[in-house]
Image (cartoon, rainbow, N blue to C red; front, top):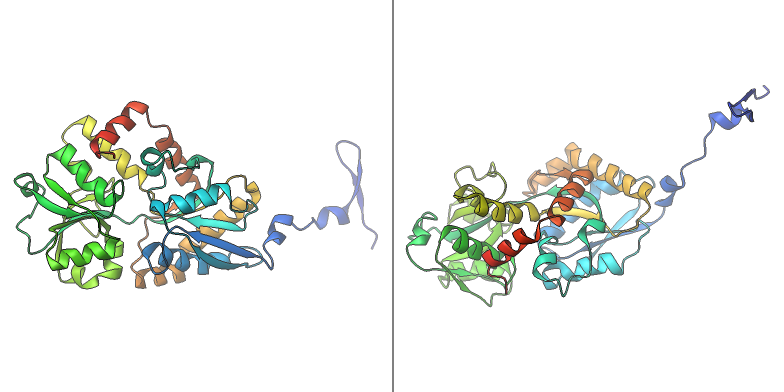
Length: 341
């Protein structure tokens, strides 16, 4: 059968065979036989690595060509090492993705001399979860509420200045008038947890409820710890009786500072370096959206105690833009509140 022809509005003659069989997208072909390098700004076995590996299994199946995904751990400098690498060194062809720590936005305020990136230039693929962080005491402590922490000094363990373990108690002291007394020098969350068990400290400055459920399930199950407040825009359904730091504020100025803190903590996100071709960014976003909604992923996530406070790449882009546009005066107030060093 002879192919039929027709005239386009511009007068060009086009055959039906050309219309019926469009060319295969080069973007869809791109990932076939390729390997994606997933850079993680944490050590193997930590909650960030566990989460990245969990979602990757379901993303790779939804990327045309089903590329292999391998993992590269790059801890260091509160996530800045991985973030700088992703921005300045990693390939920009869609074959590198990343998940660094959730303080990627705060680092721009806290460590401007070390940060070599602009967060709004990354391509945001989506957020897997936003685990709620809490400041907590041991159940043996006489401190039952935030009000109690205003009556006397409470020793709180921190890992390093300008980390969430230091920011949370400092913020509470500045905003609420608590009397948390920092004890520094602990090398990581595991060391803080051990210090709490030994009675060296009375409180831990910050840990995510997700991480506690993963690494200290008996603490959660047997109520061996008592969260005093959580840092989130709203109460986590898993912590209905624990107030947010935001709701404990009494003035609009306090609420603005604490809201910036809560908004800045992005959770377990996936991004790409800048300048990745837009069509490949869309492929990765579509794969992420499909993976996060897949019943089989959600079943696995429940077994791993990964939550479901997810967000699309578009939503993440808007959140990052909002934080990036924070007025200088509010940033200055924030820095004073967290006793920036």
